[in-house]
Image: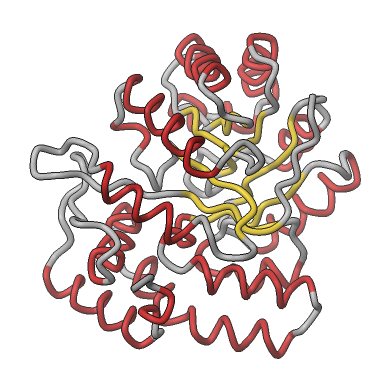
Length: 313
């Protein structure tokens, strides 16, 4: 297995859809040009929550992988989400990902795990082991909010991190104390497993606590600022970290702060449409369009942050 470094910023790409809810590939090309090219973007993650991966057909998932690989080239790590409702489905998606050029399969917890399996290593280890047996590429674990019932317990994450081809944990536990416990215990058990900060409300706090990188859908909209945050973190420059966080704060609160949280990636698309990077913020159902007043607050936050300076002429 080739060594894959996920240090730095991994951008989780959103998708734009046309009036018929087909993927708008022209908008996707513009998005890739905007969010994958800033210095500090180290990897690209497709077919996740940000990319509405659960709504895509198998053919669409494969096409997203192929087009993204063609754009970023062979040397940039390409991660793809595996959002499945059975282990057999997950194995099939992982095989498709490997066949069509993905470097890492990112394994989402299945809905069934929220009924207690996320704390029982038998279920999660069997799920991961079956995928590892089916493909040769490494995997990353998509850690979700523990309070939601889908996030894995610390002991389960530690056991997962000991698997030879588990190379990263996308850490979205949504609790700073749990995050620090996971960071310390996973690093003690498996120092080479990358901890990718992904708690959208408080990336600054995660950076201060410690991380190997950032993985965020916000990088679709503010890639330059997240790269600046990572650079300041690497330099151990608290003043610079706070400065970037001050610029991020209004957007973070606008995107993630108001309920319902299900709208977060559609809100990002509102910002990207406002900047002219994608043609439409329209989501696929069950996601719904953003109310006008919320959209207005998003565009105001985008303008306040001065994001147009990063948009290609």
